[in-house]
Amino acid sequence: MTMHDETMMRNAIALAHQASALEEVPIGAVIYCDGVVVGEGFNTKETTNDPTRHAEMNAITDASKRLGRWRLHDCTLVVTLEPCPMCAGAIVNARLDRVVFGASDQKSGACRTLYKIADDPRLNHRCEVTGGVLEEECVGLLQAFFTDRR
Image (cartoon, rainbow, N blue to C red; front, top):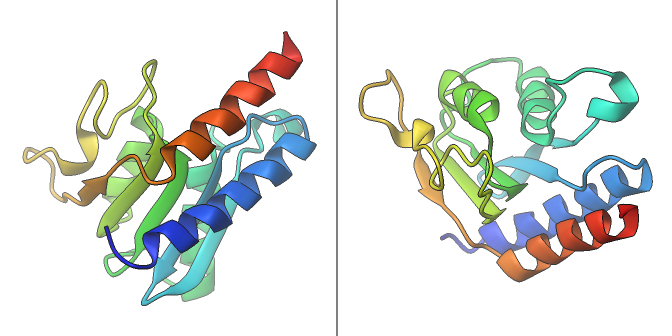
C-alpha cells in the first residue's frame, strides 16, 4: 500500500455516495498517477441502461480520455469493491500498474476472491493487487444501501 491509497479510497467512497444518490449501487473508482487523479467513475448501470457502466469501466474511460492514451501502465485504480471479471479484464487490457480495492466481493470478485485475473501469469499483462483498504467503510456503504432497499 502506498501513502496515496487511503486518500484515493476516500475519493472513491465520495464517488460511491454520488452513485447512491442516483439509486445506483454505491461503488466508486479513482485512477491516479503520481498522486494526481486522472480518472473518476461510479456505477451508472441503472441510469444508462448499460450493463458495462461499472465504476471501474467509467474511470478507465475517463482516464484514457484525459491522458489521451489507452495504456495506463503508470497508473493505479482504486475502487470500493473488488472488480468483477469484466472489469478485471479491462484492467489488464488498460495495462494498469496496480489495483487497490476496499471490500472483497464474494459473488464476483475477480482480483482475489473468486479469480485472480489481474495478476494471472498466463495473460499478457499483470498488475499488483492490494485489497482491504478502508474495508469497513466500503462494506458499510454497500450494506446500508441494500438494507434501505429491502
